[in-house]
Image 1 (tube, rainbow, N blue to C red):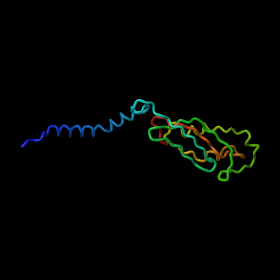
Image 2 (cartoon, rainbow, N blue to C red; image 1 turned 60 degrees about the vertical axis):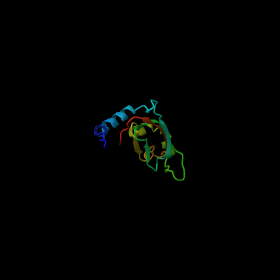
Image 3 (cartoon, one colour; image 1 turned 135 degrees about the vertical axis):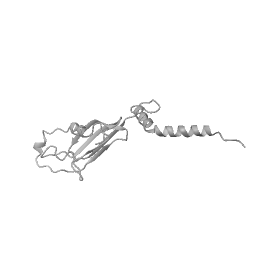
Image 4 (cartoon, rainbow, N blue to C red; image 1 turned 120 degrees about the horizontal axis):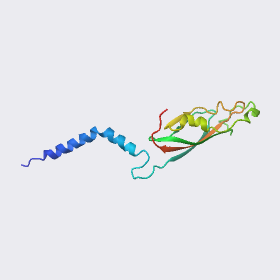
Length: 148
């Protein structure tokens, strides 16, 4: 009767438990290496996202996949009225001096985060003739995003 080779089994078992013990370190290293490059050595593709919504009435979420972060490209208000989004206009003359740029406002809340909530941003813009819609363009850029 042949005696099985127990040293081979013991070595395999030891290697398994060794890898299991170092798994957190291995995962962390892989994430660090994958921060800007795919496993094949190619640059990670950045996803372009364009969203438009009624920012007078609704809160909107901007979200990137895990392991990426928001890089804002543009954010602009407009006064396009729809049946579902029609803020009250009390004084059109007051609204003539308002600027539609919303980049600073959105940047403060979203730039560098994995996701963010934009809560009714147009509600308090331009008293008398508020903006209704907000259109944002952003990329989901490789890198670990902050969590709000």
